[in-house]
Image (tube, rainbow, N blue to C red; front, top):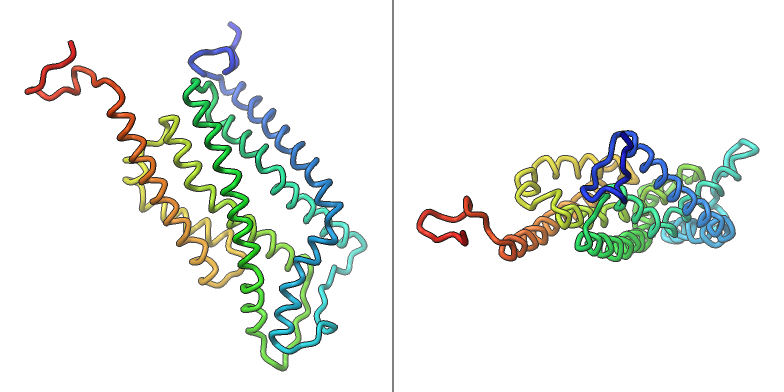
Length: 273
């Protein structure tokens, strides 16, 4: 018996093989979009790299160190400079192509949507992309102060020899951590919109959610100190409970709009039957 694809099956049921093929197709589309956008990142590498090292120059001025004493080591290998440029280009491509891969993630998680649920999906993408970019922008505004603070901990007699690989990984991780953190409420409300994740389930499992948020913040925080982890974890916890509140509002509206079954009617109230 032939297996129907989710576009042809009104119930949206897919076999395990169909799920894997669907994942492969959508991952390929997202990867192609990121690769195309990475070409632009490659062309703009010099401008972006100058922006990356500006916080180091600011930190040097803060310590009254001449700019000439600030340098980034691009590594000892012949291909290290190419590796750094490629890493930055893919990172920029990931940000630029965010509308594509966010849509592909949503379309894979919610196949076989009804017309009303497709509107929820469109609202998901329209809100997720600005929030992701907003999180990245907030990170770019925070990075200079973070770098100045961290470098300022160096003793006055000390000199910083910055490894470019380590420093650029710090910047990339910092920006992506904030961008992904701002997506948390959108995913939760989106899953609630297609009736996969009720607000009561989110509220009941808030302890597990907070623990996972702190684990995520510990892994994604750009520096090993506790303050960086807390600076990322606290906004995510606040966004989580904001998503719970919005989802509870939507659940209440849906419950009021839908007719109740006769089993849900109290004993002292006449049912519609």
